[in-house]
Image (tube, rainbow, N blue to C red; front, side, top):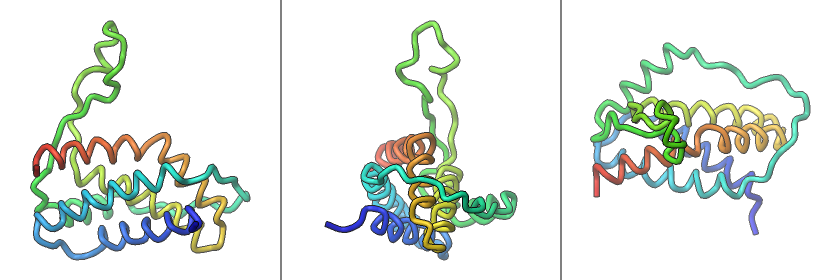
Length: 159
């Protein structure tokens, strides 16, 4: 059986290379996004909980430059904006949590990209525990939900 952290690192790198590449045809890119998101979520579920070695934090991206680059990179995707209910099981009296929220697919793909890059920062320094901690914690608290909502939007638009 292969190491789930090594497998996840290879998949994270594949995702980042795809996001950094030149745009393909919109339909090819949406199929690739669909495939990569499904594989990332499945692999994220297999990640163990890592532990920190007190390594320095991952490098921060210039958010403005990254946003501009990702908007351009994903401008031709057939899905651009979609709606998500952030807490679909919120109590009926908590109306605010049940309101639909607009999301942009390019922004969700960018958020996942930054989480993958942060983990690769540690993994490439042979800090597997830190990489695993970064990926698993961000998966559990952030990007799993985003990936699943993006998959629902992609599915609704393309199938």
